[in-house]
Length: 342
Image (cartoon, rainbow, N blue to C red; front, side, top):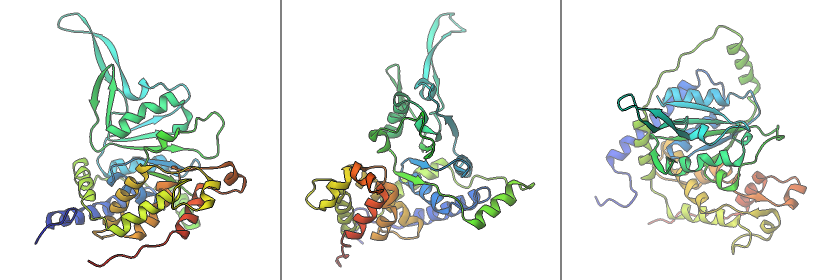
């Protein structure tokens, strides 16, 4: 049999099966302490498998921190939490060189004291509470998985995953994330209120003696292996063309963008949107037991991948239209290409 580029062969198929099974076990562990939020947990797992980061937005009390901590425990990853505040400095995140006296020679020397970014799963809590200078301290870590301090570069442990949260209702004293920072996140996940039944279960668990202990079911090394498997999933040509058409249709002035886009969109998504929606779709396909990407994967992930990558105009805001509304309209008007039989 001739192996085609990107085609999954037997060892990869076995890893894909292990990936699906591992994610199911992770979800069962997290479900011991987090009620509901299945879609959010799925998106967090997809982002992790796509070697990306997530921005979580939701009102206080929706178990965002508990969810992240539970994921770290179930995957046996090191975990640090940083509470972002207006007085937080970049060195509080990355670490800094400090002067120490050598016990042997008695001479003073600079020693690098590592900051909380040196972990595998980092929770950046209320990231929009800190000024842009401090927010930018995460840029290099998120993109290159390394930190440079005092002219020296330090590698971060793999896998490295940033989960940042922000509160959508208290905007006084906040610093909106710059476009370059937001573009580093694979997903912008909106955490909604639980259903009535889930909220009833939350009451029962949190007002009684209920206690559950989480056990790690997968290692960091396995996660890195799964990330490699995700990249080997084939991407059909018609799905790739749909991704290009969708992303480019949301850019004002593009040949295939409708007239209303220029009226409603100030800035559209860049090329990184295409890359990340494809990687996320590959991860979703494997979680669902498929070894190829479909148009359904793209449509299911369009909102979390694109909502933070386009800027609505004042006209759109005046009409009460959000980024989600614009993406829904673009998806509705975009023709679904048919798969070509080879």
